[in-house]
Image (cartoon, rainbow, N blue to C red; front, side):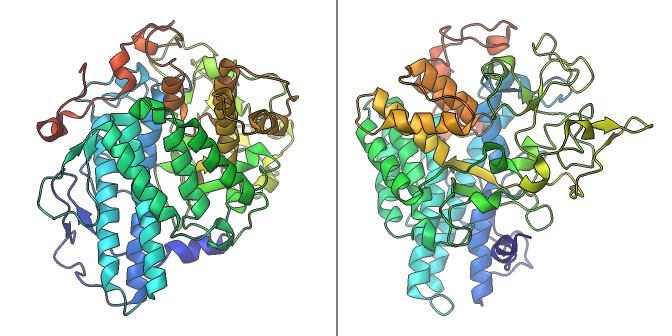
Length: 533
């Protein structure tokens, strides 16, 4: 039982409503009967947790399907559906999904609008809570207030990172912005500089993972975000910052010493045991930044729910993976990622069944013979229940899959597996990339540690293409792929094509301006549009 998770996210939940409009930072009750003043420690903690929960909770923006508008689900769609890692077929007839699958979103694509709206809402929510905490001295100590405010700044900077990475520009606001005024629009470089400055300062005000309770942001979580910014600095600003990236990554490895022993356990229902924290330790604290979930106390239609039950097919042994209710038959694998794995690579977590590898027909998915394998990286079972005999995947007389050895089946679609945002495995591969760029940082050693954990032999050298392939195999479906392809100059153009890139089955070139997503039409009167759209 995840006691810490229950404590952290079951405080008073003071819900607030925030307009997603660019110029409105005001916090208002969602209805006239809601509380407008906080009068206890529990209510302040609840408000802080509302900001943390903004990554997996519904609400705050106006969408036709609240579950589909969850932050982490939208992030996945932008980072994964547009690449060689994932596809959603025509059985999900949601308008605009095909534009993402083809890597050709338009300014009117509502998924892109929801992502941009969610980013801005989350920033506004964090700003509001930071400001509100200035009135909490009766219920929180000065030290607690300072630490929570620093954590919320890091949480806010995560959203700014996504704004920089996906859209390239946007409104800049912080807790000192004047409510009602239209904030300035920052360019990509201006956003980068502002976020790095704010993040660097905030990191020094939060405690290391070894002293931080599970679910709250630690110093290492903030450092992982800063490393990501430095990793992509040349894309964002035109100026590479490889040495800075390596320095930050090295700092993380000094306090978080080891990868988790088994890769697949990082994505199970009890993966909280690998979250670097005072609660669970740092010896194998590979998950540097976690987004907590629980099937009863922290339910979401985004996060790992979307990547497990949302991605399984009814024509698979989904009971074996811990789900007993009907899955959604949504995201599934593209062949380029599947075929990249060696036969003995322990990270190859997908189910072939009676599915076809190639995406010959993406009009539907889930039936026998459908195009694309099922991803089973994220599961409902605990690590103890994960390793079941192959003969467990049997059907009874009615044709239903049975799993007689499983001690655990999810009662509903909601998954209890936390969503890892940043992991030590990624940090190791960042160091490997920095070494390729001329930095002395023992990158080959870290590269081989990732391979050895996967059951692969160590190598004496590696190329940029080797590294990009390794990142694909280590980090697939963790919302990094689009950024990686862009950084390696393999996203736009025709240097690398994957099936259905550019709306052609064999893949075709897409325009270079698509390295940035379009600014949604609803925001262009204030922000303008990115070139090419």
